[in-house]
Image 1 (tube, rainbow, N blue to C red):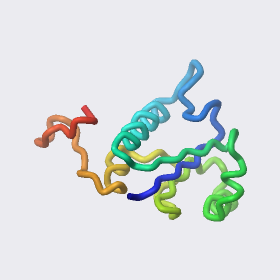
Image 2: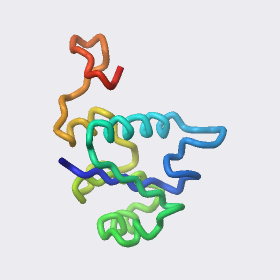
Image 3: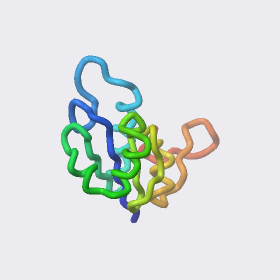
Image 4: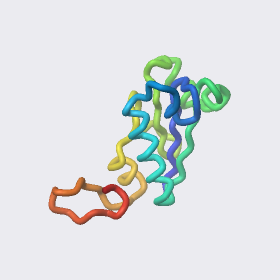
Length: 117
């Protein structure tokens, strides 16, 4: 199974889902990443504010930051290769990377997968 690593910008906590003004993208990402873990997909997250050495020690991430800067985060690696930058992966992308059936929202002619509805 593929390994997913997400290199987050500096967040106040490990998920960014804390405080009084939480962005919807972080809430959705946290739910989708929890779903991926429940499916058995290994997902690691690294927070720039809390784990800066993880960024410095990874040559791919370090090079990305040198070229694009931290404003281009989050950065998503799949098996050590850049898969996505600038936004969090969707549940459909996570499913595709994991080799799971593609998910479709209810009402598009497919049966529910049991975890997305």
